[in-house]
Image 1 (cartoon, rainbow, N blue to C red):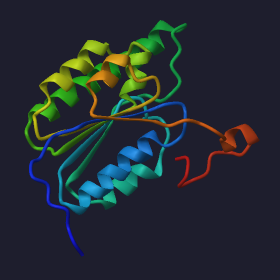
Image 2: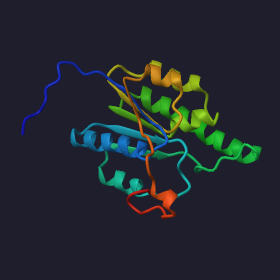
Image 3: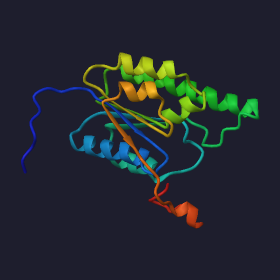
Length: 183
């Protein structure tokens, strides 16, 4: 088997966004590839946290070099209920603080901020907090940001942006989410 030799390592900013399925899956595919090279990865989930997903135990099977932090309270966020909204906001603020700590630790090759775009869109964190992370990113670290509604300032700073576009989804066919596919 032949390996591609790169002349210089450059830390990239990747964004997986859009209304289609597969944003987290794309990020985790990159994590799987990185695991094959013994790269150190930290994944911080900003929204997910209330429902079990196979990715939790799947990540554990990749080994000790892949770290997962489930920080969110789940996808239901009601701005009509300030108490619930504030709980979600506190969790997201904790996640962004942890992201900065992990980024600046120098221990990771890749940092994945899962559903961070949603957290910005819902005003759980401020766009300036994410821009600061992008701006202070170590030069060799790769940063992956997922979630719908990526802010235009994030897209401008990214090296790679992929938009997942829903064409058809089983949800609209009244098919329940499937284990191993949807969660």
